[in-house]
Structures are given as structure tokens and as C-alpha cells.
Image 1 (cartoon, rainbow, N blue to C red):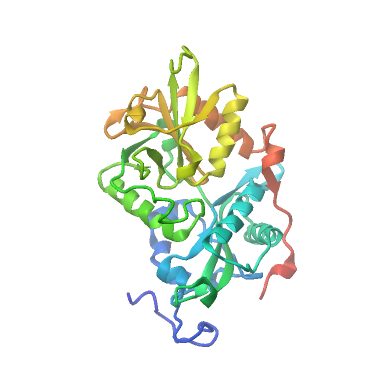
Image 2: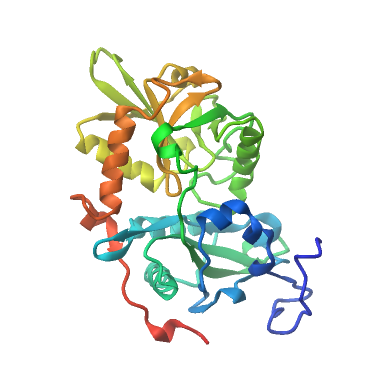
Length: 362
């Protein structure tokens, strides 16, 4: 174990209530706080939600000897809270919370420590306690213990962390677009891992793929599915725009990859509806690697990335080499939605209520 991980830890009962030899990894000692991206893009939070109440962020700990850390057995969500004229509001919270609980069900949790309403309350109270007008939200249900490698041998725990958020793919990504390549790593086969659940362990392949791409000088990686067709990026869904296809001369059709082989993104779902609102045809169909090269536009979307064009794939310029008109139109519509200025804003944005002081454990 690196020395900094266990520094200042004497295994007092308050830090080691777990069964047997159970070290705790304190977040404030983690190297993530020293990462330049973190410093530039994420503001520090003062509170974190643990189990059933708000705690000081310094108490944010995870058990080292647990299935969550040892085997990546946890499910999570990435959610955004946006600043609006009416105050902070969470984007499509109902859908995100539903997917979190669906993920927990898929991986085999039989009894959970929280209900959907309790998850929403925890999210709202954590945002309010930290007084963020806009932030990224990370609720997680992880398996504590379970070193015998069965769900029943551990205990599910619930946490919510929030942090201020600026840019994920860089300040210029939205305007210029980014460069991507086809990863040598394949998207997980659905019989190898539950691909419809947002499981922490699933993202090891994403880290491998994105690391490979960054080392090769690209911004993002596109992962093919086990069938050889395009699946998704390391943390985003993908869309292709082409005209003059299927006899629709002059009409632009937006294609996206079939749901069966991807994580069904909530931002993806939002963009499909917004695109149809604008009059575009959107179809789900298999997309081959070479179809990307000849597309008029390719763009990706996700909670962190929002909507970003791909200007180059595998050293091939896509379209005009910048975010195209369809991409920009959807960026504009999405920005209007999350800022509270769109007809769909009332449906998709949930205002954050005031802090309930009783939720803070001191």
C-alpha cells in the first residue's frame, strides 16, 4: 500500500467499525485532490451524504476491505444540477434515480437502504448544504464487506457526493469539437457484464481505452461492440448525421447506435426528443466504423460532456472539421433546456429546495 493512503490512521473505532481488519481510505488523502483537472474544474464540497444524513466532507470514507473497492461492486449515477433564474435545478432527476435503483436491482441487491424518494432528498440536501448553484452529483450504492464474493455476505451502503463542475472535455471542445480514435478495447459483451447497469467495475475498460487514446494524442476513444459495430465512447453515447441516404435527398437523418449494446444515456434520450422537436428524423441502427469517416457530422453526449462534436476520427477529418450545424442546433437547444429557458425545462428540471438543518449530523 502506498504510504499516503493509510497515513494518519490508527484504526480507532470511529474509523474502523467494519468487520475484522478493515482499513478506511480517507478521501482527503487521496491523490485525486492533487490532480490538475480536479483543481481546475471541481470546487471543493463541505458536506457529503452518508447513509441517512449529511456529514462533513472530511468524514467521507470507503472501506478498503470491501467488494466495492476490491472488486468494483457498486452502482452509481452521474447527474447535473444547473443554475437557472429560479435557482439551482437538477436535470432529469427522476430518470437518474430510477436508473440507479434499476442498476442495483440488476446486479443483485435484494434489499436497499434507500427508496427513490430518499435518494432524491439526499441529493437535494447535499446540494443545498454545499450552497452550490451548479454542480455534478454522484449518488452511489456500494457493497460493504462481501469478501466472500456474494451479495448476501455484505451490506449495501448509500452515499452522495457533489462538486462544482466547469468543463469535462476542455473549454474549446464545444466550439471546435474533439479528436477521437477507435479503441483497441471492445465494449463489454452483455453476457460478460450487465451493460444496462451503471456499475463501477464496468468502467475499467473505459479507463483503459481512454488512457490509450490520450497517449496516442486523441481526446476520446470510440469503442466497438462484440459484433464489430460502433457501441459508444468511454462515457458518452454517439450520433451520426448524414444526408442523401435512403432516398431522402437533402434531408438529414440522425443515426444512433441500438440500445441493446450500450448504456442507455439520459442525455441521449433527451437529445433524441429535442432533435425530433426540431424536425429531424432519428433512427437507431447499427453503425460501422467506416460510416463514421464519411459522416457529415458525428457528435457525442453524456451528463459530463453534454453535447460535443467530433472533428476528427482516426486521423480522418469529419465533415468541415468542426462542430456542424445539427450539432450546434442541439447544443443550443440543450443549453436552453438546462438553463430553464425551454418549453421542456419545466418537465426536466427539478428545483432544489432549501436545506433542512435537521439533516446535518454534527
